[in-house]
Amino acid sequence: MAEAVARTRAVVVPGFSGRFESAGTGGWHQGSDADPRARAALAKAGYSLVGHRARRYRDEWTAALSLVVALDTENHRDLETLPSLRREPEKLVLLRSFESGGAKALDVPDPYLGDAGDFEASLRIIEEALAGLLGALGAPAGD
Image (tube, rainbow, N blue to C red; front, side):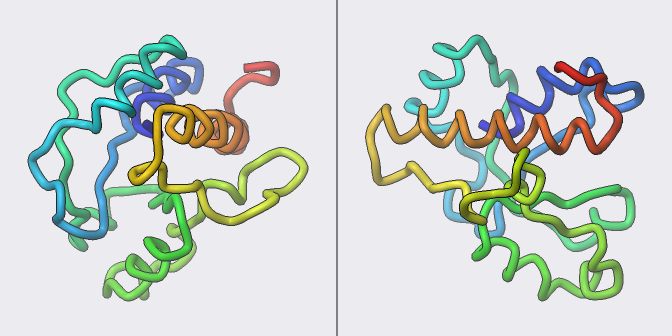
């Protein structure tokens, strides 16, 4: 869901359009399409996720990236053990650290074991935190 929101909203950030991609820290769903409940929540909110396939983060990607954004502390811990991110720890951030007014919690709740409402709630959190992230990257105020 974060990928779809970022790609849609990044159009207003010079130099960032289409440069957001998602990957997991484990290979459980590798090659799979997004969860149907995630797709439904995205569609309901006006986003699309075209051509998405789950994949696992690869350590060699870090050199070409400006930021590696984790959605929860467990994934953050997994990522910070990678050699590339031990060398460049400043690249690894938690998405909710960009929420306006400070994050109430560090993790975007994983809605996987929940229902449609849980996916919609996680999407709202992602939208708010991504607005802050895009603002930090130079998106115009009021986006």
